[in-house]
Image (cartoon, rainbow, N blue to C red; front, side):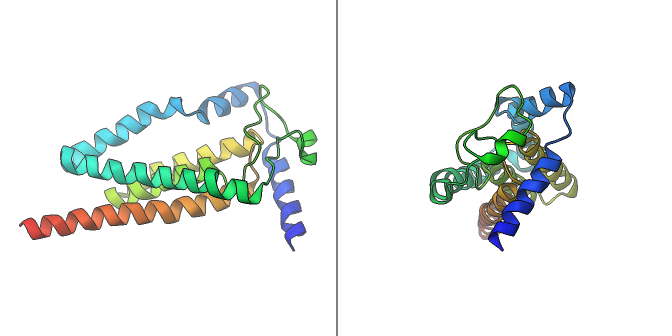
Length: 192
């Protein structure tokens, strides 16, 4: 069964990794980067300040940051060394000869589970729980989906890596968002 799932994971990846153009190569490489998103993160924080005031926004920011750090550390620091699943783009992985590599970018050695998937979903779910606004949730889910697709497009993750990362991020993001939201609501109720 495990071999079947591994083979299916590889086939789906090869299909999703096969649609390359020069424009999309540049776009996906840019989109998957860390620093391109700083204005987006600042806009999210500005929205928190506008909606909740600076004090609550800082507490919510801390909860969101905690969710992202926890998901990142669990995936990169605990699970990847435990499972040691080579990235599809890693030259030591036999499937790498069939992967389209963009500008020599191969990522690190191991890719299970996906930190991009976990971190994106942790951020999205924490923001969704905190803001309780459908538009924000749709934007965050769209951002997460595109962020995860870049990893498949670039051949640095299998779909299974992404799915497990998304699940981890969802659990951690909902947990951190819920704890911060309910704590502040309870505090405000006691204060009034």
